Image 1 (cartoon, rainbow, N blue to C red):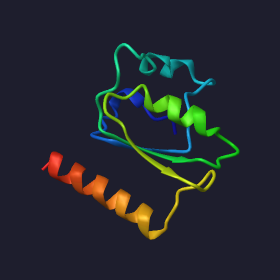
Image 2 (tube, rainbow, N blue to C red):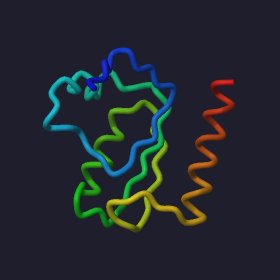
Image 3 (cartoon, rainbow, N blue to C red):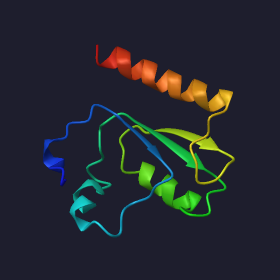
Image 4 (cartoon, rainbow, N blue to C red):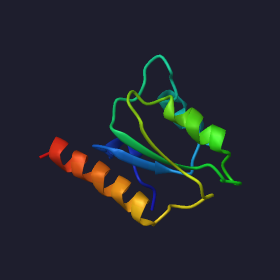
Length: 100
């Protein structure tokens, strides 16, 4: 089933192992360094990612007004060690307070 993306209203985003889409030009309106996205964001980026180069993920963060960035030493994955869990919990805790 096709989702109407215009009806989705996010309060915050958690982005992991990604970069600017080259295959979906309809998203190009979001990639504007002069009009940055103000939505709170946590970017989870692996320095050892062999699928999405680390630099491309970091470049994506520049499209956000005040991105929170969590760099980890692993690759193309969402880490689940104690350090990463604390990062996620802290971010989600801030978001829950922000949108009470």
